[in-house]
Length: 187
Image (cartoon, rainbow, N blue to C red; front, top):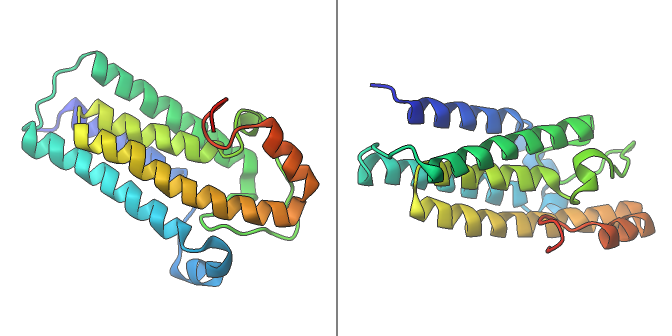
């Protein structure tokens, strides 16, 4: 029997993946020197977070989680995360790529969600992945989502910011001083 939890998690994961540009092996190889395999770290951690959450929910909670304040918190994190990520991807448009790369006509975007933090698409995805684990009442999944994805984005942000500094120089340094990387007012 298909439950609300099954449908909601499936729909949320589809929405998260739809905001992700396609990742190809050739693009990953071509941009290996700039990306430093950060896309692979993000994909592996994302898969691990969702898999652990679903396995804990399905096998250790027997797929039976009561709908309560924890569930609502998970839904809120998931929905806000997906919306924030989608807005970030839309704001960057053709410049949003799966791997770290700077295109010839690349511009520094500081409007929309980029006026909140420097890497809003990662914040949105992080919130959504944590939200999925929280919604499923997965303690292990929440822990892995919080710390594992933070590590993945920590690596990715370091790589990406190096490329952005090389391209935009002082303009990017000023942006760094004005906005937090991932967590508003903190980091």
